Length: 570
Image (cartoon, rainbow, N blue to C red; front, side):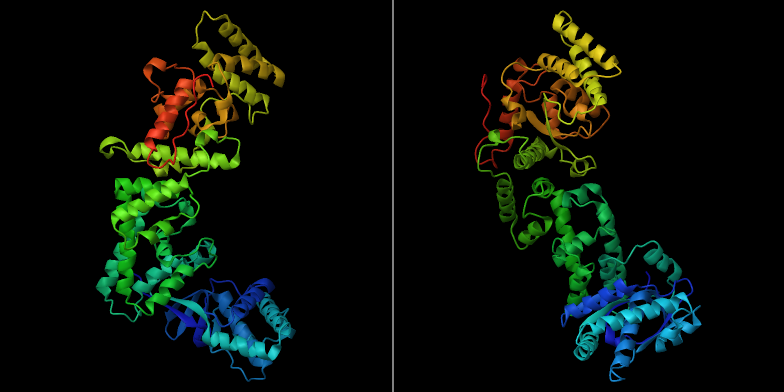
């Protein structure tokens, strides 16, 4: 286990000699970076403010500066300017910067002679930064600003001090932090807080080793995609370490927070007032609670739905916060209330329309719940809804079970693809039907044309839809009885296909082992339709009525009123 000292130090308390090794470039901050640092510090005023980490390795009496050279040099220049501008009244910097391959830079920082600005590129950037600092102060009331900024450095502004052990490979760490652009995360800093050799706690080395092992085990378990996708909709690529999810939960990091080290600052503050052992027990306990939810069949599906459905005002954070100190029955009752609220609408679901944006979201959420609850209610808890498969790239979205339009099809390649997809379904109809034979001939002619006219395509399309649709009204087309969660990718021809074509594609996907939501598969296998009313190639009124009956049965606990069933002939 690498030895680390982690602390937050006031800028005014930074002392010593910092050695910049040859593997680092020189000072390169421009006007924008210097100006932004000054503005951030000054606008923060007397509130506590923390700069990003300075990573060092002790080498005898000096510190090898692995990361943070640009910030530390700028702070040095600010101190140098304040000392000069105050006529020596304000102190000089209490630390020095020494360079392995830039001998003159150390002396130049102490004087900042503008006449030497063009002598080399390092001097140019140092002078440019010093001029920016001078310009910034000129825009303020100089005397009070000098006094205030110096006071902020002494009392409010801190750096994260991250000191690695002497055995650490400094070049490899520098490459990771700078060349690889992989910065220290809040999680790494929190871990270092527990494992620091100078954490001033009663935590012995054996306990630190135990925490290190438990930490790594938690991280490993969170790489189980089933667990991860149950807990969050966030892409795992956004997390360098997945334990951040647990730490953010405890720190109650606000959504949209832009403070990179918010969670570390939270734990650092607690670590100054509480025993580290107690804080670690809370982290471990929190993870075990989430794991218990994952392993509990009922909680897994109910919590998983609330997170996957993107319900307004509901998050893992809000669920976790409510769960504290609650009995299981009270907790489950609240989950049921939240689920019921998530699908509550001011009308009947039968009145919602696919083409209305707000309705689209409501129907999608209801059908997601229908899929999850159908799996949850299977006898003997034989199956679990796979949130990891459902959230994979190319997500499942709301689509028509039986489409009769040409939405999104604008190119003749898409028209021909649509005709080819439906040719097989037409062939399965009665050979003695003259309309079938004639339609197949029309399909072949259209597909064989070098240039297909849109009107010609639409005429043949209507013939096909007529053959593959049940007669009667078409008002149901955009309602919930003709909608399911489908993944037809971006294929416009397939999205606009009739029931039989989509059914064949679903069967093909199933044979290849592709994931298909439980209820979607049941729809296209005609699972809900009574056998005496089953028409294999069509999605008719009997199918739609059976489908809605199943929705009402599975979701009876949550629906404020049953979804109305379309009546035959309506």
